[in-house]
Length: 325
Image (cartoon, rainbow, N blue to C red):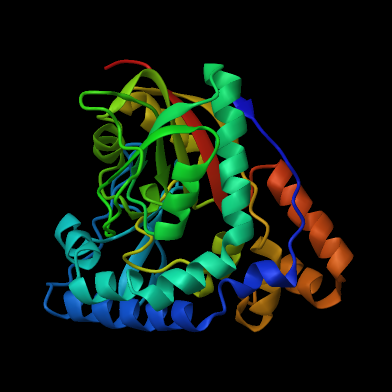
């Protein structure tokens, strides 16, 4: 397995994508929905378990009434949430209508243009590296953004394109031929919402040919900002249910029938998030509190570079190959 590493500096523009009107409104809708869904559920002692086999995980933090537990064995973080609650959250029509609205989609496209360009470059270069082709049949699994779908379909490496399991209605101009298998599957920001990750990985790859590639992006539980800020980090129920450790990832994909080819943690914002929430850092985090109080931007950027290089950022990108049909 290759651990790729490309250093990208953060900027004020990068973090602005998380401080926009629609994101704040989305957060309010999500919190109200989570509390509504859970107020009728019977709250019992935590019985969260980990994909590594560890049972009865200790509490890590609580957010919006939902316990997040951390595995003492592999360091994965999981929300103590039932599959039914997560499904109800994902299928809530008010949230779907909000996210598919023209205003939300337009603002997302404007704010994420740079990150989408980097995403397309990542997919383009990695597919050529591992498949030695220049055009591919693509399945985009769980896409939320119509403009991103359009950009993928219009990219130079797309031969045909299909969306599956999406909240959007998107009419592809170059659909997959009947019966054709995909060369690549894009599975972006879905794993973090999974209650049964092995099953969900297999499901997403049903249309992928043997030897084809699946691309993942997801939040992970071993990242600096999550471990430092806990409930004050940018994760929330039921958008983030499963936050695997880097240690667990290979095992999950192996169980699903995939081999990990490459992982990277190109996150840019861990230190900036922590700096912005300096007052929320726990009192016993003495080193972090001191660093945030006394270090300048250049030092924080150097520390972010260390996090990227050491796989300690909270955002990871993964390339896996399907080993069997």
